[in-house]
Length: 367
Image (cartoon, rainbow, N blue to C red):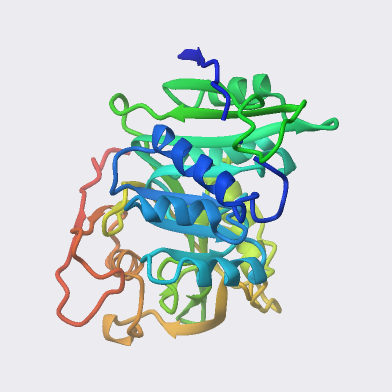
């Protein structure tokens, strides 16, 4: 890892909710600063904690494909209005767990948000997983009247996650803030490795069964595959094994507290969504415990739970996420190891007549 300190020239900023960018001089200063931190356009830029969308708009104006996320529906609405006509999309979601696919962005841009995360190191690990090979994290942070994060902590946390870390002191650049400041303002850039070992997100899925039916959830409000059906699922978090992850996700999504002995491995699938990066999916099976009844615990991410016949392929409903539908087919056929890769032009949903992208791998047969 290489750490580069850069001595800033004088330039500007402030603490207004709009990042001070209502001031034309401040906006111009940020517009001049961003090109040095962003790759050549067009790139896929994710602005987390976007507020009213001021920085997202600057990136969009430079020709980047922008996705902006904010926890506040009100702020997201203001950002949507500001970004109208740019092609940017604005999502409501938690920046600590953004409703976007991993490995899909060239830049993750975050300003004055990391310091407010309960676990900044965990947030950085999640954000780094959103980057494509060669992508970069752009973090603007500071220490104000005792609040905030010193740059040393951010640099240390990024070290194991990226190939190179750059620290840019910004306190002296008064044009960015609209006034002189006497506290610590800085940017830290983390550049992800463009070559090296293959990395893949690990996710978990549950085929919960009841009297020949399987439970499916209809996605909503996530920004990915909304309106489509999928088994209860999620990502493995840092420090978890796959079984612990599926038990946690099952409770978070359905309210069911399954025990480790209740779940069994159904199949393992390497899969890739259209335009995405490869993932490893662990699919588990479990029978609904007697007297238990699942319910929708995440109405902000799920429009409802429903039971569907599992026995015959034609019994599966339309509108399934394609790789989930193919996993169900493999599961019914007794196939336990599957490779599934979308072509970039494929639909996320499995549609009538869509090509089969799943290839079953034969186990060794050794005991």
